Amino acid sequence: MISEEEAREKILSAVSPLPATEVSLGDVLDRFAATELFAIIPLPPFDNSAMDGYAVVAKSAGKNARLKIVGEQPAGISKDLSLLEGEAVRIFTGAPMPIGGDAVVMQEETQREGDYVLIQAEKISVGDFVRKAGADLAIGQRISKRGDRLRSATLGLLASQGIKSVRVGARARVAIVTTGDELAAPGQQPQPGEIFDSNGLMLASLAAKTGVEVAMPRHCPDNFDTLCTTLRDAVHQDAVIISGGVSVGEHDLVREALREIGAKIDLWRVAVKPGKPFLLGKRDQCLIFGLPGNPVSAFVTFLVFVRPALLQMMGAIDLSLPRANARLTHEIAGDETRPHYFRGELADGAFTVIGRQESHAIFGLARANALLRVRPGARLSAGSEVEVLLID
Ligand code: AMP
Ligand code: MG
Image (cartoon, rainbow, N blue to C red; front, side, top):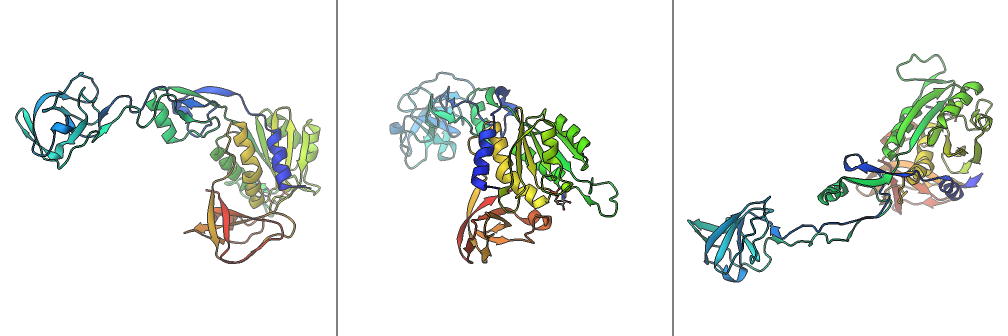
C-alpha cells in the first residue's frame, strides 16, 4: 500500500498530455489554453466616450459655459471631427472622441439651446467620461497563460481582440465501465439481492464536469471473459474509469483482466479513507483507473486521483479543487493511519459533517458540498480553522 502523495505523484507522472488543437472560440469554454495569449489590439482600441453627452475642451467648459455645437459623432463610425475651445461635439457612448476634445459632459448635466449647449455640471476636468485607448489592455499584455481554463469572460476578452480560434489541449475521451453481478440499471426490475447502479451515472457526470468526453458508459458483470472483452475495447480511449472489482474478493476480477489484456498495473491500494483499493494501470497511452465500488469511495477517489490526471491530460496547470476556509462546528477524529476525507456541508463559513460516513452511504454525500481532509491520527476540536475542498 502506498501513501496518497506517492499515489498522486505516480498518477500524474503517468499522464501523457494530449496534443493541442486549434478550436473555434465558440467551442473552447472550460478548455485549457495550449499557448500563452497576448493582446494584439489595445482596449479600448481608440479614445471614446463613456456617456451620451457632449465632447468638450475641459478648460472652456466650466459651469454655465455656452458652447457651439460643431458636429455629431455617433458610435460605430469615425467622422474625424475636431474641436476647439468654446465648441462642443454631440457624442454618444462608445463613439470616437473628436480631435482636440479632452472630456465629455454627460447629457443629464447640459441643456440644449439650438446650435448651442449650456453646461450645467459643477466642474469638468480633463479625462472626464473619456475611455482612453489602451487604458484597459495594452498591446502585448498577456491575456492568458498556458494551461489557463478559458472561462466565459476570457472568451469575451478574446473575442474583443477579434480572435476567432485558439489552440487548446484536446478533450480526453474517457470510457466508464461499471462492474458487479449485483447491479441493475435504473429502470430495470432488480432481482432479490440486487441493487441499482449508482456509480455509472455519478462517475460519467463527474467526468463530464471535468471537461472530458464520456465515450462509452458500459456495465459488465463479474465475468472474466466479458470483462476482458469490455476492457480491450475501452482501452482505445484516452482513459478508462472502472467502478468496482478492484478489491481482494474472488469476484474482484479487474486486476486479472487487466493483466490478461496486456495492461500494466502501476499501483494498487492507497492509504486513503475512503478509497483504499484504488488502482492505476496503463495500456499503451490509455490510463486506467480502478475505483472501489462503494459509491462514496468512487466519488472521493475520482476527485482526489482521477480528476487531476484528466485535467493534466487536457493541458490544465491548476489541478486542485477549489478551496475555502471554514470553522469546524464539532470535533472530528480522523483515521489513525490514513488521511481521511469527511463529507460535509459548508455554510456561512462553518463546516459540519453530514450523514453517515461509511463508504456506501451516499445519502450524506448527496447533501455534502465540501470535503475535509483530516491527516492520519489528527483530532480536530470544535471551532478549529480548517481548509475544505469544494465539490460542487
Ligand atoms: P466492489 O468494489 O466491487 O467490491 O464493491 C464494493 C461495494 O460497492 C459493494 O457493496 C457493491 O455492491 C457496491 N457497488 C459496486 N458497484 C456499485 C455501483 N455501480 N453502484 C452502487 N454500488 C456499487
Ligand atoms: Mg464488485
